[in-house]
Structures are given as structure tokens and as C-alpha cells.
Image 1: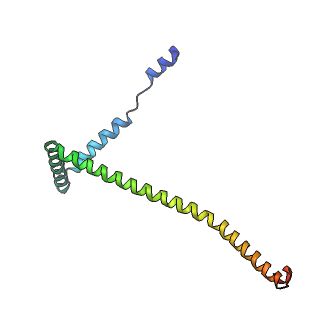
Image 2: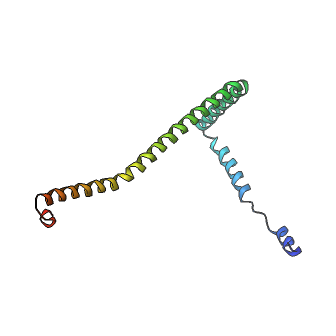
Length: 128
């Protein structure tokens, strides 16, 4: 990087957009607290979150057990879905071979009827 480009970068005005957005959010939040029902709601939410955090702090083993149980359930579900998808793929693959097999069976049946009719003395043109 040349000396001039480094000098130019230092003189660029810094954007205050993020700072203004944060300040606007704080001011908006403070203004919304002038409403009594909003204050009650914020107080109740804050109380619930504090209770949850205290519970987590006092019972880390229970939280770890819940996470392990959820992880095990998720793993089981993923395995089941994976097995079902594999079965579905196998079924679709088998079904993709059926049209050619059916076509072959129809052709063989047609040939058998033609051969029977020829034995009976009819030409292939009359059979069609």
C-alpha cells in the first residue's frame, strides 16, 4: 500500500450510522416506557428472564440433561428421516425400471399372440 493511500484512509470521515441507530433505539425504548402498560410488560419480561437465568445458574446439571435429551431426540429423528429417504430413493429407483419391464412384457405378449395367429394360418397383417 502506498503512502498516499494510507494517508487518504486516515482522513476519511467515519460513518456514524451505527452509532445513530443505537442511540435512536435507546431513545425510542426510553420514550416507549412512558406508557404504563409497556412498563408493566417490560418489568414482567425482565422478571421472567431473571428467574430463568437464576434457575440455569442453580441447576446446570438439569439444563445439561435437557440439552442431551434434545440432542438425542434430534439424532433419532435425523436417523429415521435418513432411513425413510433412503427407502424412498430405493423405491423410486425400482419404479424407474418398471416401464421398460412392462414394455418388454407387452412386446413378448404381442409376439406370442402373433405366433399363435400364424399357427392358426393368419398373416401378421391380419392380426394388426
